[in-house]
Image (cartoon, rainbow, N blue to C red; front, side, top):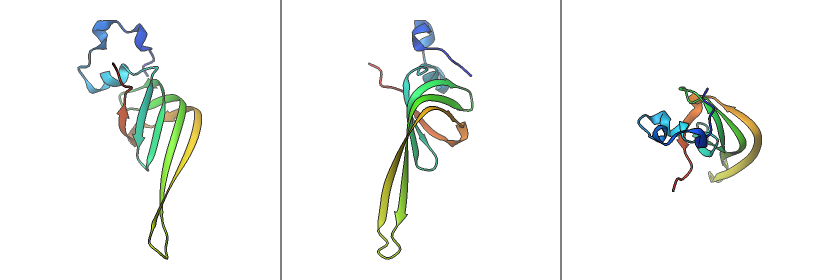
Length: 103
């Protein structure tokens, strides 16, 4: 797994020519990850590999649960927030990775 902060990357290596370059440039920064099962993660990217397996630190996990009231057929949307110190994310559950905004 890759593990390098962006400050240690020389300017010529900051180019994005492949999709994983964008993830590489986000090492040691907060990223947003949308996952299968109505889960969202926001945390500091510590490491990743070519399968998008990731290690995230200081993670906030948001789980969205939609229930249907059997009598009124009304949808009830609930969100559950969890905090994790460190989390391993399996790549096959990742839908989207959003790097931090760059100025």
